[in-house]
Each structure stands twice: as structure tokens, then as C-alpha cells.
Length: 324
Image (cartoon, rainbow, N blue to C red; front, top):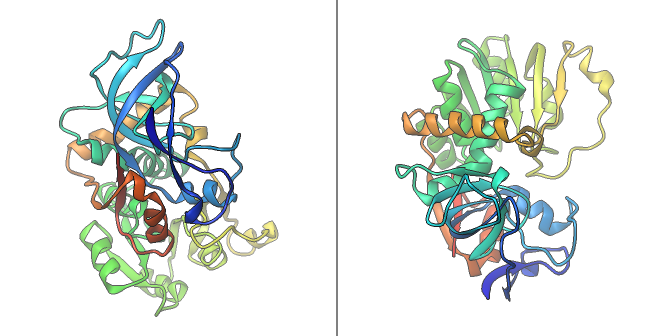
């Protein structure tokens, strides 16, 4: 028996229940992993609240973690018991141990801590595809990163800067603005006090941005279109403020023949070779010092409900991990 967080009905943080569960032995192509750290992500709240559908009830939330292999399934040759690993996978991470597919798992170098790995598999791999695949940021670009002091935001700021971009971020407080600046943002707009569209125009001298990375959603979506230069790309990859309202695509033409996309990490990592390539790029950026993954809060696994309250209350910066 291992301790896990299970959800029997969708709702607020109070539906996260601590329970004992029994795991099966790993099957073909599977590993049994002892979690040493579990990543906390906004997408976890979407599954918990019912915004995103789940395959079955009850379910164990969480998509990422890092730890040690306890056992391997039949014919698994890529990993062995004792190996340090990190993964981003289907639901099931909020547990002391979990079964995870080999195809969702990457080896973890000794130089990368379990906490850092658990914090960056989903957020860092998201930043990887946003910067290198959805829109390939190049030197001289100006990019806008909403929620720049969040877990994904801080990685986007650092990595975008390392790629030669001018990085504009938005943040909700002077403390968060300072954090974003310390992690590569050239300019940070306090969105509660300033009109971010007007400030983007001012900062860029009217040239606007090549791309807007928007993980906030409802509150920022339409104004973000006005931050883009002709042929610019609005990348909507999250809904921290709520789901985006239905969009009139006719807006994109007169605003500059803009592009709009709603990518997901799991589409990008569906192919094993692509996932390994993305992880290698991410770990390389971290190992070289271009990207530092700040773990700014830790909660016990059994305190997952309060971790969700802090996340949804925008009371966190950087990455937060659950500790089994």
C-alpha cells in the first residue's frame, strides 16, 4: 500500500483526498517509480475542477515527477532498478509510487536534483516546445511572456533571453516583477496597475512583438492580439484566469494577418524520439546555466489541497513541488 491523493468528484481543493492504494506490478513497457518529488502545475487544477475531462473516477492527479526505479516490466531494457529518472506522463503522479510508461520517462543525470527535475518536466518541456517549435525564437525578436514570475514564465524569460530575444513580461506585483527581471526579463509590466498593451507599444516604439506566450487565458487573450506585429503569433497555452471565450477569427486579419495556436505538450511528446530530443535540449540548457529552475515552495504530498489553494490564489512564484 502507498499513499496517494485521489479525486472522487470534481470540485475545489477540498476534493483532494489522502488514501492508501495498491499498485500492480509494472507490465510490458512500464516502470514502477518511487517518487522523490512531484511537480505541481496549473493543469492539475483543471483536471481537479472538471475543466479538463478525466478518463475515469476516482483518479490520481499529477503528470510529472522524479525518483528512482523500483521495478521494471517484462522486456524493459532501457532502465533498471535504482536508476534515477524523471517523467511527464498521464495522470497518476500525486502518490508515493506510481506506474509509468518507459516512453514517458527519461534518465536523470546525477547533476540534476529530483526537485528540479520534477519541477521542469512539464514546465520546462512546455517552454522547450514554445520557444523552439511553436514559434522559433531568434536573436532580435521581441517576445511577451504573461505570468512571467510563474514556473513556466521564469523558464521562458531565461531561455528567451539566452536565445537573443528582448523579453517583456507581465506580473501582478513588484515582488514578482523583480523575480522576473532577475530571471532574464528586460521589461516587466505590472498588469494590475498598467495597461499592458499601451506599455508594450511604448517599450517597443510601436513595433510590437513577434510572439505572445499566454498561459493566463481569459483575462489576457484579446488584448494580447494588440501586442503583436503583422504576422505575429499568439500562443495560448493555459487558462490560469479561466477558459478563453469563443473567438471571432475575423479579428486576426485586420489586426495584422496574425496567427493563433493552442498547442499542448502531449502532442509534442507523443513520439518517443521527439520527447528525448526535447528533454536533452532542456537538460542541456539547465546544465549550461542558461536556465535555472527555482523551486520556491514545497508542500507535503498529504497537503496537496493547500498547495492547490496557493497556486490558484496566485500566491506562488517559480515552481512548487509536492514531497512524498
